[in-house]
Length: 171
Image (cartoon, rainbow, N blue to C red; front, side, top):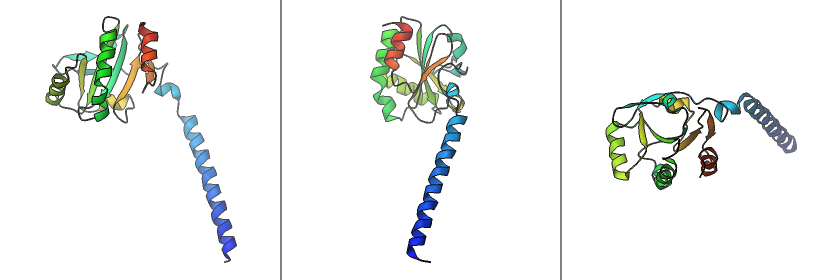
């Protein structure tokens, strides 16, 4: 078979694959419902133990703005974000605001030691099975989810968290 024909077959074959992959991606986008992953959806309820063994349920915080941070003790980005989280907690703790740090598949001992070492002022919860993280679609840490007073998700992996908090709680 001449070289020119082989090149033509390769070029048209690659072009066909690109068209098919673009069409497949379009179907995936159409199947993905943004409302299922962002605002206008009620946040999945959960009950988890805090590091002291007390049960904390999300539904009991209805009427407050809740920032859920999905995290671990070993995540360097999570550790780097602690000063910012402390600042947010201090700024809004006297308002209708709750910051919940959900430690995914961490032991009570390890999370308690971590909290003491870093003087964490907010509530630490233990998602020992990772079930709550899965319910929220967490694929990496840190992941922040902001829930409004109405119990609906306002943003996931919020790039404008400061603006959203000011809007929901005032400065």
